[in-house]
Length: 60
Image (cartoon, rainbow, N blue to C red; front, side, top):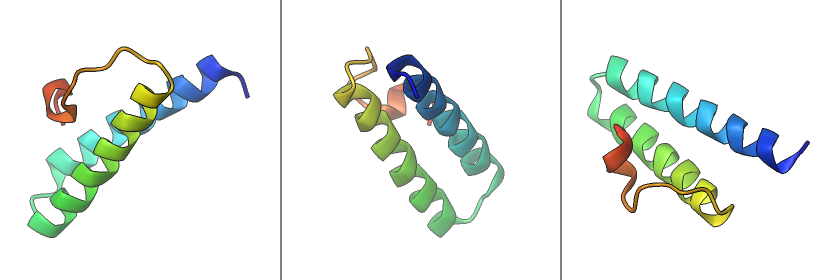
């Protein structure tokens, strides 16, 4: 898997997590999904992707 392919998969995973979090109004689930999104955000950052400083700034 190429570096670009990995980045695209992480971005897609973030989009799915954000979609699920918006659809699930259960606080515990929202918190778990928000943490998962944050971890993917920082994974992208560590891979050199230009992301916002805070994961919340991207719509999570």
